[in-house]
Image (cartoon, rainbow, N blue to C red):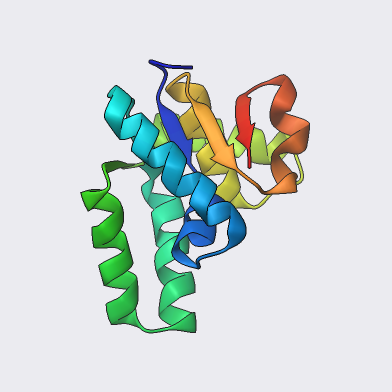
Amino acid sequence: MADSPLVLDSWAVLAFLGGEPKGKDVLDLMARANDGGVPLLMCVVNAGEVWYTVARKVSPDAADEDIDGLVRLGTQFVDVGWDLTKLAAGFKSRYRMSYADAYAAALASQRDAALVTGDPEFKPLARELRIKFL
């Protein structure tokens, strides 16, 4: 997994931003990835999920600051197109999961990346994806 990209899902990012116990694990993982030149990826759909969650709980300005902070920490946001959307729809059709989570799974699959999460919704996907559970 050293050279393989890491895909951050919203669960991992919200744990980090919220100062939750697993958030330190996320920060450590991001630091190690940056030190090792490992790409940190996040689908814009999942970034949107983070933004609206922070905007609801705190404020839109805080949400903007948090998204900017993710970029400063080396997170690359990946836009969606039909190929990624079709992969996400395939995951959604096969598994009980949110549509946003299906995008995180699709990005990990498309980029041959490990998905970083603590969301138990992803456990059934462990047969298809490399998942780094926090």
